[in-house]
Length: 286
Image (cartoon, rainbow, N blue to C red; front, side):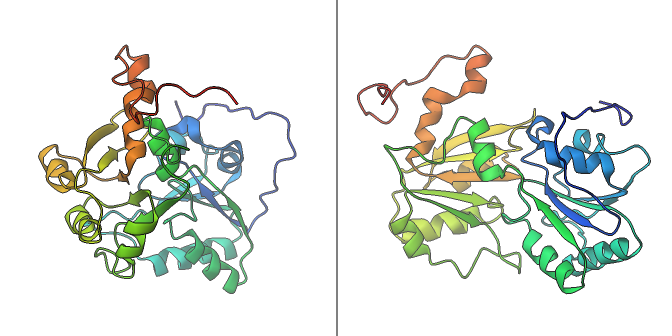
């Protein structure tokens, strides 16, 4: 897809994008086709696109010809832009009369610091608009054939970040409450501290044999999925070279990948187990 490719959106009452507006938009988990139409509309109008590391180049190629790109990515263990500097840059661009698209991977309000940026912009008197995106913790797992909810497994799901503001494993999480209260746990940015996080959950009562899936580069051509257990997750992730960005899912919903790994089945791979939960077969339509 080249930058000058013309993209025609269907007729719709699309939102205005006046000069000075900062539009915070979620780019989804990676695959360009999962971008929302409203996000595409913003790309076609923006003067400046300030984007994160996880926004696919194919999405950036859909921007308006002549618009500027500014990288504001944050990657663990690598030199990254400071959050304060990013927010100040957005303010400067807005005050210069630019139509500013702040494009974030996933959803801007799900572990994306979109709330921090929005708050800073509003406090500075900058007009904003927000468009959600598909979060990797839901869409990325679905792409891997794992539903985050299933009637035979869970009526609740907990989303966690794998690190806090210091870059360390989150210290404010009540691990005992999470371990006891949430049948399914989805953890963003967990690879670096997976051993510690797994240890906390095990110490809080989770079973070492509980199913775990690690999905790296979700929805992209290089996506990899590792199925393991809570007790072995950290060692297996290292042994198999699982790398960030990755989503970790803990819970029996992981077993459902044996029957609904739709991408594998489209490649000709067989269904591994039509009833992985042992519920007695397929559900009847009700």
